Length: 300
Image 1 (cartoon, helix red, strand yellow):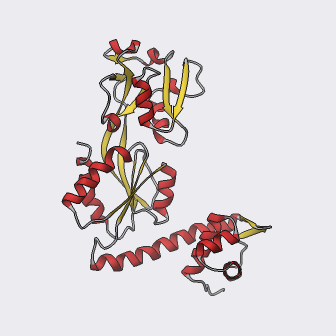
Image 2 (image 1 turned 180 degrees about the vertical axis):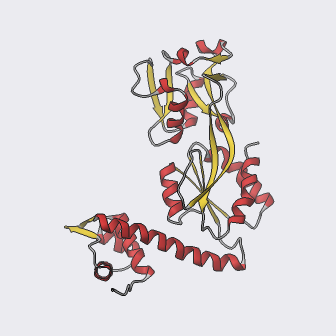
Image 3 (image 1 turned 60 degrees about the vertical axis):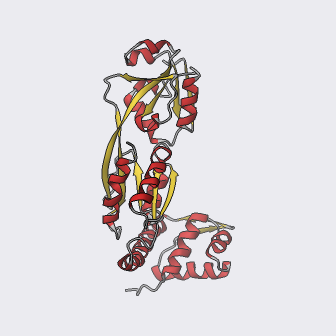
């Protein structure tokens, strides 16, 4: 039976090489020489008795067994970080900033008010905020790079806790000059010949809109035109100019032009659930409970 003999530094070298896919870049990122990093990786492989990486010239490829080792390395580093956080928080729960992330279709509409309320209600709490895609935020949360994230999709990962905050209604928006403007509510069949404005791939709101309004599927031939954008704000401006219609979350109605009308569509009960998600082993869960109502108040 082999006696495991490696350090947290070895695991940091391992994850750096996995992310950079290049020895020289991983060494530079780790502030060590390339031979130092190479020797550490080789000793780790010998100690574990498996091949973690396949070397091809200057590039590296992760083996199937190596991927399992890397996944576990991230967990070990996360737990080590938690150990350090526990020690710090024992002295002062606000000694480290709360690292909070949100998806692009939530962050701009909730963070400004949230920060203002935190400054007023918990002035000792420091914040580091980030906006990104759902999958990126989840990866950063699992690796310990973020403490809590705000999502609009359910996550059933066994190592995560999800707190539902509020329902965010999804409604149709059109210009006051659009032919749909005269209707109180819109049937899905009325959308078939409209130019539809939608977020691009990678945005979970895109999938939610397609679910709520199946005719928006990009493979559908029922639309006169389908235009994608990377920003809800751009979509709002285009709707205002009557270049098309779209589905907008209630959160994003802030500063909505008077030339844009909000309409119920389909069955009129479409929404996305906004939730807080954090790791079960996060060392200060009471802080999450403290900010949850502040987030809810930030949309009022």
